[in-house]
Image 1 (cartoon, rainbow, N blue to C red):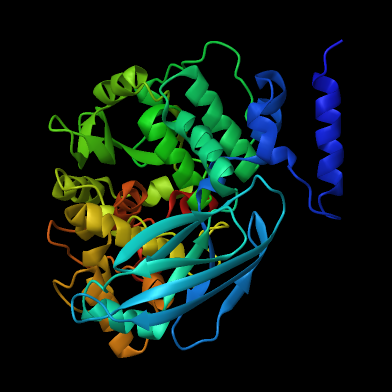
Image 2: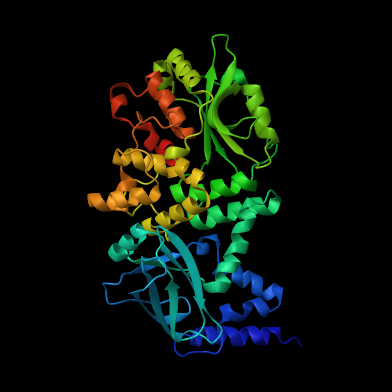
Amino acid sequence: MSRTPWILLLLLCSLGLASALKVPLRIKDVLPVLPRQISWPVLNNFHSAVDLLPSFIGSVTPNNDSIQWEGACFSGNEARLEFVEGDRGLGGGVLYLKTSEAHSWACMDLYVFATPYRITWDYYFSAREHTLKFDSWEEPAELEYVKQHGVSVFLMPSGMLGTMLSLIDVLPLFSNTVWGQNANLAFLEKHMGATFEKRSQPWRATINPDDVHTGDFLALSKIRGRWGGFETLEKWVTGAFAGHTAVCLKDEMGKLWVGESGHENEKGEEVIAVIPWEEWWELQLKDGSNPQIALLPLHPGLREKFNSTAAWEYARSMSGKPYGYHNMIFSWIDTMAENYPPPLDTHLVVSVMSMWTRVQPTYAANMWNEALNKRLSTEGLDLYEILAEVENRGISVDHLLTIPEQDEWVYSDGKSTTCVAFILAMYKEAGIFGPISNSIQVTEFTVSDLALS
């Protein structure tokens, strides 16, 4: 008779006793060494892609006493920061982190430590006082930042093993396979409560262009491959159930066209384009990300108001301009904290901005530097200069991120519109918003906002 059920039973019993006493091993610590048919179904219930996101614990400054918290492995944790002499004349620092009361003998905690100027990490598996040394602050601005705000401490909530398993869980989202497709659907079901019903064949509908009108809306949801994985995470963050949008236009001859912001041109660039319906439809059928497409007709009452001439003029004026990366992330941040799905928060967002600024400065400038300068009425400041300016003005980064985008802002490469902002701007020009048109900032809309409006 196999010993496996008995081993599993003992482990389950130890899991139940874990809250009462310290056990040598917890079930999560030893599952990876058990037979795959037992370990993987249980591990999949414990961990998911969201566990890859670190949770903000607090900020350790040299002026406060210390911070305390409970970790994934150690129940008792305490951290403090001291300034020391450095090798660049700016001084450095030592962060002391004391761990105690481990849940088991085989667990460990994984941490990320960040300022806007650096991100580092460390892991701890023994109960004692650990040290993390900052040999020197990068520049005077970092020293001043740490004096005021300290070093941010993030905990990987699933520990080292859980983080690795979560990474294994998130990688399939970007796989251009049936496996990847199922992973995306499972993620949306688990984290957004989405439900999916498999349609009966034929799975490809036939759309008669004669039945489509100017202003009709196209909602797309890609569920596999690179863009499928990206859209799944975008949906989770913004609360939308579609990841991309486009709009239908008919010319004077009755020919059907599709306008979209995010069309990939021959150079691989994401741009605004207006292309014939047949060409656009063929691209969707060949798209390996398996896009699910919904055609949503404009309401008959709004169709009567729709000024096709003005819509075409706007579409032609924007054709060839880059996709609206400048304001993409700001359209869904409207409040100081309530727009972030747990465990996302401002601290994590700023830390990611800092990391990308170091790794891809051009990318960072395109994604947020220009937009943040607009909000401060400044020009040419990089992320670190922006943070210094925020500090000088006595406002918070949380507040800066919530300042609404303005449709009249012109960036270095022109006006910036995401896929949904491009469509709403066209609707605005076509007159369907009537007397409230001037009160609407289309660049503040997400796909979720449009679906609810």
